[in-house]
Amino acid sequence: MGNPNDTLPKLSAPESSSTAGSTPATKQNRVQETLRHVLFVLVASVLAGLATYASRKSAYKRAYLTSLPESYALCAEHGKIYTVDEDRLNVDCILVKGDTIQATGSMDELHTYWDMYQNELVNKFYGGESKAKKPLTIVNTSMGSIVVPGLADAHAHLMLYGEKMQLNLEGAETIEDVLDRIEDYAASHPTASDDSEHWITGFGWDQTRWKDWKGGFPTKDDLESRALLANRSLALSRVDGHALWVSTRALELTMANIPGGSWPDVEGGEVVTDEKGDPTGVFLDAAMSLVPVPPPTQDEMEEHLEWAINDVLAVGLTSVHDAAVSIEMLKVFKRMAEEGRLKIRVYAMAHEGEAEYWGSRFEKLEDYGEDGKLNLQSVKLFTDGALGSWGAALLEPYSDKPETCGLMRSTEEALRETMSRFWNDGWGVNIHCIGDRANKAVLDIFEDLIQDNVSHNRRPRIEHAQIMQLEDLGRAGRLGVITSVQPTHATSDMWYAESRLGPSRIKGAYAYQTFLRSSRDNVLPLGSDFPVEGINPLLTFYAAVSRLDVEGNSPHGSGGWYPSESLSRAQALKGMTYDAAYASFAEEKLGSLTAGKKADFVVLDKDFMQLETPLADILTTKVMATVIGGQIMYGGV
Ligand SMILES: *[C@@H]1O[C@H](CO)[C@@H](O)[C@H](O)[C@H]1NC(C)=O
Ligand SMILES: *[C@@H]1O[C@H](CO)[C@@H](O)[C@H](O)[C@H]1NC(C)=O
Ligand SMILES: *[C@@H]1O[C@H](CO)[C@@H](O)[C@H](O)[C@H]1NC(C)=O
Ligand SMILES: [Zn+2]
Image (cartoon, rainbow, N blue to C red; front, side):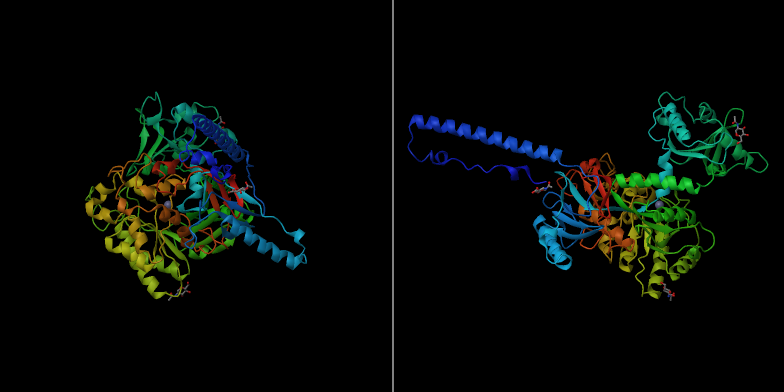
């Protein structure tokens, strides 16, 4: 839409009023002039009001499209299409034909382009018959909105997200609310009354939030109080993942699974019991693994994936890198891609447990499926645990727990063997590293692998790359090892990270600007690790540029936590588009609004790319439409 002022009728001031001061005028003349002036102002403002009203009305009444034609030019206000294409960062319009961007530029440029294209067509196929020319359909986005390339999440877990959100118990204010939600779910997923194979799993309960709650953990009897839940196998994870609340039936199945039938002492865990010593139905930490929750079936996984895809589209994501896809999960991804139901672009990282070498059990996939939305080029490996549980492998002891340095999942030698095997089999290697010891070990290995095998651009990736020695920050970039980071981890961890690492190591933690500056390929793909963090990519964008939590706070105040490591808005947008595409070998097809690339883009209702837009407004920005391959997959324009 144009500026409303563009449509104002051009009224030039009457001659007399501009010359009134220079010619001697009678009193009557002056009165007439004043009257005329008043009249002029009145008429002008009425006209202006009408024009504004008309343009608002037309904006309001403008057709709301939930599907788009085969070819169209999509236009925003002047320069409000952020292309992430270095050669033309901001344009007014993009021309789409089929699933591909044909051209970008001003409306005039696109009209010229379209005319040339139509001329060519009619000359070729219609003997120059100009009646055969088709007019260009212009689709204007609404005022105030912007268009950006389809957003990517470079590290997430789709099925886990779907599983978590399907029966989400977060935010419940009473236990009745929790039980209602579980009962609703049970009603929509009925099973025979004696079926204990189909478990119901849920996430996110938090008894500290329940009003009038008696205190302590809930019990199996609370679940038993609802008719639809009696005799079903339920396992419900607490919001922090450190407690599992189960039903009577689930408890029986757990008991049946335990050799000897008496509860073992579990190191690092607890089976909660009542005064009589009987289990109440809550298992803590390591004891949670006693509960024999079966892995989800193919159908359940498909349901989880569908659930996730709907939420992915609603937040403007068009591509997701799934950071651990097992053989069983891959079957579901492939089936949905074959049937054209995947909807979003998925870059899967293969992962199959810690057992023997599994590289030969997967095959690479390139633009797989009916509409080519599934890709698999790399494997996901792990080195260490997480900072929150002192599991990240550090070179020196934890500052707040000097008796430990965290844990490597395998020795450096074994890790070298594993990585080399996958690498020399031709796999892209993406590897989870949190602590500085894990990162150093992996960089040492990558350095050797790259040296031995320079002929291929393999794009090795370190997932998380949270804490590095200062010299390793630069080494990663120099070697072309891609650091795939999650800015919301920085703003979640910032409240305790420094006490855990101390004042000097913290300088090499969450060092996003340093990574980007030293990256040989100038890339820093951004992700969220959802469902660990929220799915909305604007949370990632906000955390990257502000280094603040969503309330606007940080341990260093409202200026952000170590703000020198924040990203500019342009860098953050590129990290969520082009850089993510690069990290998945897809930058020639995705990641920017450039002629020849796929027409993946998002229309958002606020221009959060402008510095004048307050940081808090990033979080209230709404997705109006998510477009993949030229077609609206969510919302409308
Ligand atoms: C789109 O906006 C332009 C001005 O920016 C206007 O000239 C044109 O008529 C609009 N087209 C439609 C279909 O709304
Ligand atoms: C509960 O399930 C078990 C087996 O899973 C079955 O033997 C029992 O009859 C069921 N009870 C009711 C009340 O349906
Ligand atoms: C380098 O990698 C390729 C696969 O990408 C493999 O075929 C080749 O054997 C490797 N070279 C060495 C020296 O391992
Ligand atoms: Zn992850």
